[in-house]
Amino acid sequence: MQEKRRSVLKKLFGSVLATAGFGVAAKAAAVSTNTSDEKQAGNVTYDQDVPLFSGHTIMGNLVFIAGKGAHFPGDIKAHTDHVLKELEKELIAAGTSMEKVLKVNVYLDDIKDYKDMNEVYKGRFGSKPPVRTTVAVAKGGVPGDSLVEIDCIAYL
Image 1 (tube, rainbow, N blue to C red):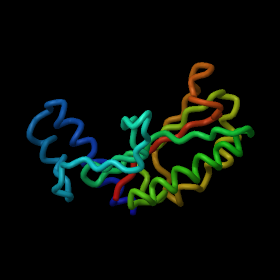
Image 2 (cartoon, helix red, strand yellow):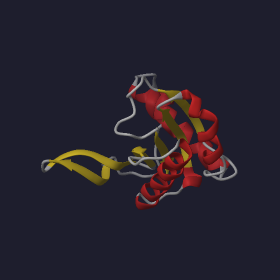
Image 3 (tube, rainbow, N blue to C red):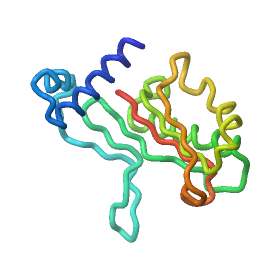
Image 4 (cartoon, one colour):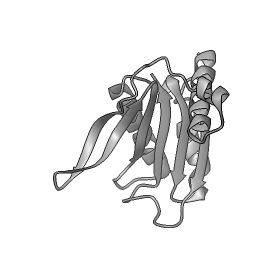
């Protein structure tokens, strides 16, 4: 599984380099095993009958999951648990799983919640967890009443 993650990451970074114009070698690294360049969106949220955003988007072999929050009263542990469950539901709807997540971004309403968030987060992505960035946003930066928002990138 780790070899598969490395392969997918190579393709992702090759794609980024190719887009930035870093030459033929980078473009060759970006070749996907999925020949469709068509973007597929799932679980679209609407605002007054106008598409606002998708719960997930698939491009090639990559799945991009929109940020999930917890919009109910509770502490960071309850919010983190809820958000991770919502993330897992979206991954499954997109045809992948928590074990295939490559990158996670965690946005905390308050950095003091870092330790408690980690307690709930630990082990949720299998024995080989993805890379992760965790930041505390400016006060009021996480939408709604959520104490945490999490998004991720996975492979199919």
